[in-house]
Image (cartoon, rainbow, N blue to C red; front, side):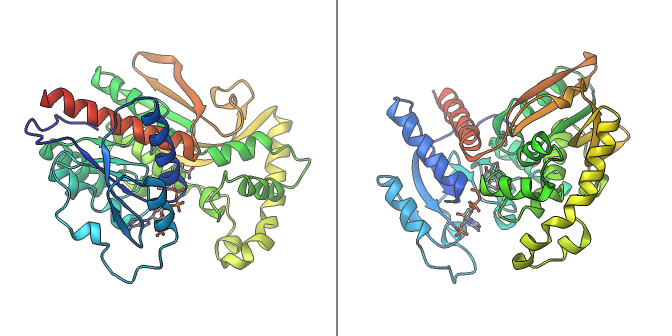
Length: 361
Ligand SMILES: NC(=O)c1ccc[n+]([C@@H]2O[C@H](COP(=O)([O-])OP(=O)(O)OC[C@H]3O[C@@H](n4cnc5c(N)ncnc54)[C@H](OP(=O)(O)O)[C@@H]3O)[C@@H](O)[C@H]2O)c1
């Protein structure tokens, strides 16, 4: 989603990084590597997590460390949020998963502040919020950089937007949109119980610490909503039928019980794997939308299906549209992980910075 950048940018844009977790830290590391290669990037004016905010950018790594060690915040509103400090032309980088931060995206954009986000709760949750973000970007002349929200910067959203801008109707999009679930179903061969692969994936950092978040399909629902809306389909969250892999007993478990209860996944998934194999098919967790609706669920696909390629945590997405009615446009690649997510965020930052520079010249 982009818009004309304000012509009256008064000075170089400044960065506000929200989130000092896995992605925020990877972003700072990549920022340093790009700087060392002579790539001009805006300076950090603020770095914050939910507990503390630090101004200035001279000692990025020390600031990160201080923020990670900060005591729990007792303030209800984080200090950066209530400040009028952000000016039109500045860039907020949202590396949180915070709903409260996502709620502010539209407000910032309306003030001409650009927003670059890995947080899917802006355009992947409530439709009204997503539409407000689009409208605010237009009204505020600001850019909403969302490449990191789906496929960690793989050319998915930009391909959809380019096809729509070129007059195509998107007839269907289906894909393996979760790196962790891709890994699980690329590895699950019935030799070991499914739960043992879940534990391996969690130990490798492919799943969230609570793997139910991945297995529930909710993350894929958000990505599907972002893609559908980018393709011009105003889907509501409840329009996506999600078949969770998590049985009720596991869904209801406390954090301490999760590990013991993971084995409830094993029998049903083993059964589905064997049934798929009898038909020469492979299991994939697929998100799909077309004119008839949208769904997320486990599918048994023929081995030569477009979504059965790829390896590891690869995302793989097939786009059918007017110009590609038979063979879909296929986008495949590493679509998960902090490094590629940070790269996508900085790509968007650079696009804003270069756009601003071009318009200000
Ligand atoms: N990890 C990945 O590989 C990956 C890949 C693609 C996309 N993403 C997305 O990227 C985002 C960040 O993921 P992550 O793995 O880096 O998460 P994380 O390690 O849990 O870090 C989240 C950060 O957000 C901060 N935060 C939460 N609420 C905040 C608030 N109100 N104001 C300022 N900061 C706030 C947290 O601060 P505290 O430490 O003070 O709580 C923490 O520093 C998520 O939306 C995730 O879905 C992650």
